[in-house]
Image 1: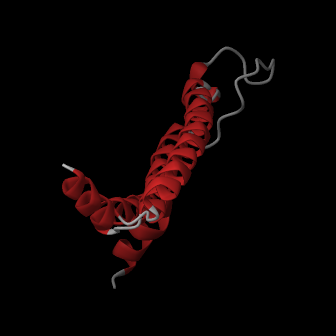
Image 2 (image 1 turned 45 degrees about the vertical axis):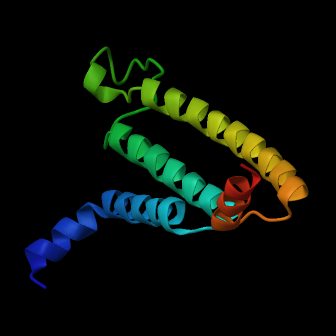
Length: 128
């Protein structure tokens, strides 16, 4: 591998990690038949999206968005706090979604005795 390519990959490792996590989460959501595994895939996917926004919002050499006499009024000297606040909200929504999904999976398991997607679809078709 050439040094230019390895340097490019090393400099962009957070983006590569995000892509890997996105693919793992997408694989879990689409290919797994167990609903708990699908939920885990969804959480990995959400985590990758949150990581992408946080990495993208980072500004090298910038300070937290608290006014400093040393840095002055230059906006490029400060990080934008909006993406971080939005991702904090996304984390809260993700936890709430996971809690509701786990509660629904518990009800599904108690009612049908299975959390396998194929088995549930077969049983629902047989009921009709």
